[in-house]
Image (tube, rainbow over the protein chains, first blue to last red):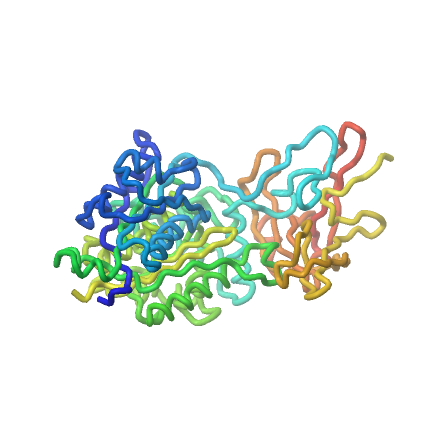
Amino acid sequence: MASDDIWILGITMTKFGKHPDKDTIDLASQAVMGALADGEVTMGDMGVMAAGSLMGGLGVGQAVQKQVGQTGIPVYNVTNACATGATALRTVVMSIKAGEADMGLAVGVEKLAGAGLLAGGSRTADGGTWSPSGRYGAVAAVDGRIGTETMPGVFAQIGLEYGHRYGGTSFELFARISEKNHAHSTLNPFAAYQKAMTLEQIMGDVMIAYPNTRPMCSANCDGAAAAVLVSGAKLKTLSPTQQRRAVKVAASVLTTDPFEEACQILPNVNTLTRNAARTAYEQAGVGPEDLDLVELHDCFATAELVHYDNLMLCEEGGAADFFNSGAPWRHGSMPVNVSGGLQSKGHPIAATGIANVWEVATHLRGEAGDRQIPDAKVGLAHVIGLGSACGVHILERSAA
Amino acid sequence: MGEQIPHVDYLILGDEPHLAAHACTRCGARYFDRRNACAACSGTEFTSVDVSPVGEVRAFTIVSMAAPGIPVPFVAAVVDCDGTSVRGNLINVEPDPEHVATGMKVRLATYSLGLDEAGTEAVGFGFEPLS
């Protein structure tokens, strides 16, 4: 192991779902203590910490320290929409790469069970006299009157736009993607929902934003995930067990969306994902064909389809054919979201970008139990937060 | 008849209602919001350009769950108006997948958002099928 490599030493996620008896800090503390125990280290070994939570209030990192260990190390509290967890992870990666710490802790946490529809911008109150305000000089709310800012609707358009450009999509195709992820979740005890659903059940469920029905949308739930990262140089000084279970961070990339025509009309989630993937493959020295499994950001069934293409798991324009070939099923040639994905594992926003890394790392360690992808050596974890930010991490199994 | 006010400042009312965009004088990038600078080239000078009132639906969704006060279902769409992408609802069409499709030709149409206490009518826009 090269001294300047970065490794995951310990990583964990809480079960996703409803945790009415635990608050944000309980969940984050549980994940942090789990990651430390998994890496056989303590808070005293950590040189830096990054914490993410969109709904958890200010200073989540310090609040967690006050429960599990106040050692005086720097805390970076970060937010980047649904890419918050990946951003926390990458903050620790950068700190270790910069030589400011040889070990660090990243945590993401969210309490979201029972939350309703997540929309985009703010709304102007109606009533009184019409008076223009905001960047559009609007006299009434624009969301719902001039297009939609609701997440299911935004990502529905992203999927249908892909279908318009390349063909091959249909309501049924998108529902089949969801059928796959719900089927995968039956093997994952950490998933919020572990129920297989038939195509008929999925297509016949409550319509949220055509073509996304309720089970085709990410599940709001509670959860946390945390990771301990270590430099290659430090890892060499640790025990054989720690070295054997360590997982290499072969690439860690964060991008935003570059300007293109229409990108401020409908968010373009494609180019920044493609850019992140290309950079990550270069960093890791691997190609899509080398991946044994992928956890990608299926916040909606319509999103999963476009990311097959953006992550270059298929030919450009070939996402529908790729899915129809059976490739992304767990026994296919390119297993995607064997955890169940956001649609059934759940999406506690800031936890997601570390939980998907945990899923991949757990397979690379050969510790994924019933859902283990046999002999997994390399995997990719992807998240995207609207706004937009995209995080891609490529992980490799330890050679030790 | 009382006065009218557009829902948003880029909707130009009158005999031929249309949208007007801010076009960057350096690179031509178009925007509908108040600008600080150009996101494409960082230029700071803009000119107002009229946007074609006819276009083609490039993406849509039929929203069944929305904010309070928004009637559902409604069709949200992205319309390619001769090279300028516009966000808007599809109106005067049945909001179901049998009547809406990508590639359909549409044109800008206006409708009333209602009167305020002073009797001023707010006018909104959407896109309706061309034929």
